[in-house]
Image (cartoon, rainbow over all chains, first blue to last red; front, side, top):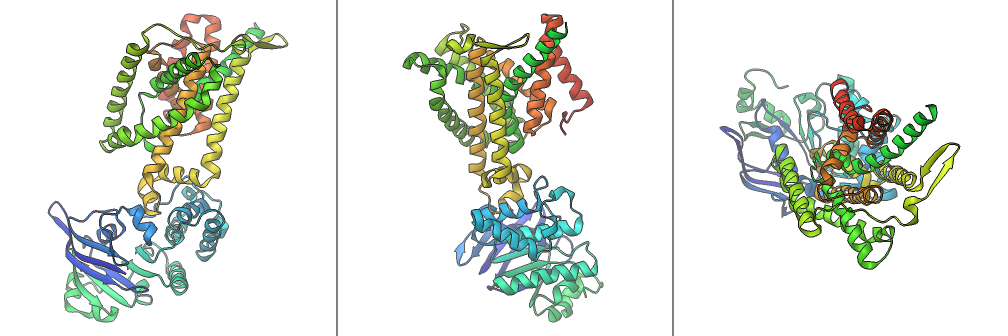
Length: 239
Length: 285
C-alpha cells in the first residue's frame, strides 16, 4: 500500500534519508526505532507530504504521490500524529475532530459528527468534548493528537512517539486504543517509538533506522538482537 | 453638559460601528493569513467610486447597487489573493506589506487618473437627511443603520466562523497551517474565500463612508489608519474586539471633539499609542 522508492533527503550535510526504500502492506503494523537524528521523523514528513524528498518516489495505493501536498495525501488516507501534539488550540476537542472528519475523511454534516463522536468515545475524550484544546494536559493532548488522526479515517496511520512522556498505565491505554482501531478498520500503522516496550506487543515488524538508512528490518526480537542494531544503540539495550 | 456627554457617547458608539465595519476585514485577513493589507482602505474607497459610477450610470439609488458591487468585491478579493497575496505571503514578513503598499499607491493613482482628485460623495437620497429624536437626542437614521450594519456583519461572520464547517476550516487554518494541511484542508480555497470576504466588507464600509462623508482618491490612507487602530486596540484577530476597539476610538473622538474639535483625531492616535504601550495585545486578549 505504501512504497518508498530510493528516497534521498539531505539538510545541508546531514543525510536523513539515503536512497531509502521501503514497502508496507495493507494492515501491517511496523515499528521504527533508531538513535536521535536517524531520520525517523523526517521519514514521516516525506510520507505525509510535509517534507519534499530530494530524490526518489513515494507511492500510495499504487499511485505516485510524491508531488501531492500533505492535504491531498491525507484525503487519500495517510494520517499522521506529531511527536509534540499540535492541536488547533483555539478550538474545542470536538471541533478538532470534526474538522478532521469533514476534511480528511470527507464525512460532511451528520456523517462527520457521528464519526467525530465515535472517535471521541474510542479515545476516551467524550467528557472533554467541549474543552478548548489549549486547556488540555499532556496525556489528553497526546490522545487528541491520535484522535484527530483517526478522525481523518486513514488507511495508513503514522504515529510519532505517541507514548513518549506518559506513565506506564497511560501507555497501556493508548496501545489499546490503537489496537482497537486497527482491529476494526484494518488500518496499517507505522509507529516511531523510543519506548520500545510499547511497540513490541503491537507491531509485527520492526525497522531500525540509522543515518537515513534501514539497518534492521524483520521480526522485532530478531531486529533488536542483530549486532548492527545493538551497535547503533551504543551499548544501551534497546529492550 | 450631561446631554452633551450622552450625545457624544451615542454618536461615538455609532461612529465606532463604522470603524469596526472597515476594520473587520483587516482583522480577518490578518487573523487567518497573517496578511497586513496596507491597501485595505484603498479597496474600500474603490467601493465608494464603484457605487458612484453605477448609481449615476444606471440612475438608481446607491443601496440598489450593493447586490452588484459586493459579488464584484468578493471576486476581486479572491483574484488578489490568488494572483498577488499568495505569492507575497511566501516571501516572508515584509513582502506582503511592501506588495500591498505598492497596490495601495497603484489604486490611488488609477483613481486620480480615472476620477480626478476632486472630493466626491454618494447621494443617500432622503435617508441621508432623515433623523429621529429620543428625548433631547437627535440621531441620523443613516448613522444608526451603519452601526446596525456593522453589528450584523460582525455577527454573521461570528456565526460563520463558530457554527459552520466552512468556519471550522477557516479557524483551523488560522490556528496552525501545517496541521490544517495534515487533516486534509485545502488551504488555498480557504485563503481565497477569506480574502474575498475581507474585500467585500471593506467595499461595503467604503460605500457607507461615501454616504456619510466626502471621499477622494487618497482617502484610503486615513481610513486604513482608523481601521488598523480599531483592530489593534480591540485585540488582533478578535472580531468582537474589533467592534470594541472601533467604539472606544469613536467615543474618544466624539468626546474630545466636544471639548475641542481640533484635537479629536489626535486624541484617537494618542489613545492608540497608549494601548499599544500598556496592553500591546489589545483590550480583549
